Image (cartoon, rainbow, N blue to C red; front, side, top):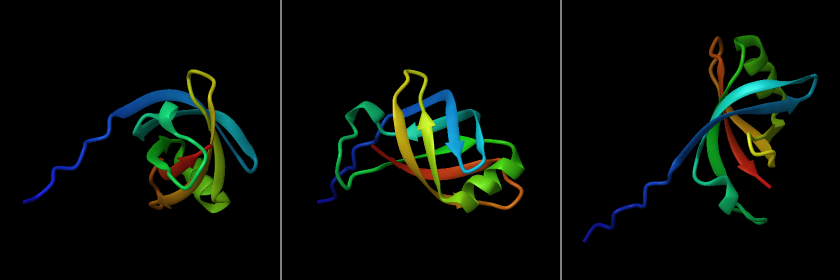
Length: 94
């Protein structure tokens, strides 16, 4: 018998992103509830939208910090980017 996977909620929003040499606004979407994230190995995934050149710089930096609309701060590991795209994909943790 196959088990159905629980579908995680999606949390879109506007916030601030900071990485080497840049701090500014970004639109983001996180799969899973950030308020449930605790210290440990579990991470949530999502994406952030930036200018194409800034997205490439964020990917090269590898690490970033995202401040959500509610003021919560999360560390990001940038895990993906396509050259010319304005989107970076990340895993977030506390």
